[in-house]
Image (cartoon, rainbow, N blue to C red):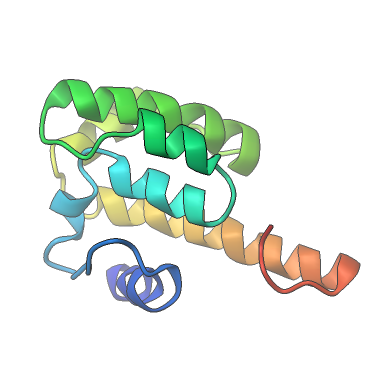
Length: 125
């Protein structure tokens, strides 16, 4: 699963930094890059992301970013972000970041399929 997610992040999403299987658990600890993904797909407003999300190492920053992510994940994706899942990601528990990324990737791909079958679009908007 990590290989698929890493390939998607680097080849399709094109985040502000290159992701590897070895770095994925640390790269996503503070929640910033999850926000970057959602911003890129129009699931978080660009201005909100730019003014409210921070890319830092403190636990306070991580908690703030995940609090902001939670409403978008629930409202736009229907994903519930449980406290123990967030804790595991912040702690860098192996595989936890990739699981949430896979859930996000799956939603975005399903959205593309739905969009293309309804109105001919292939990009999530």
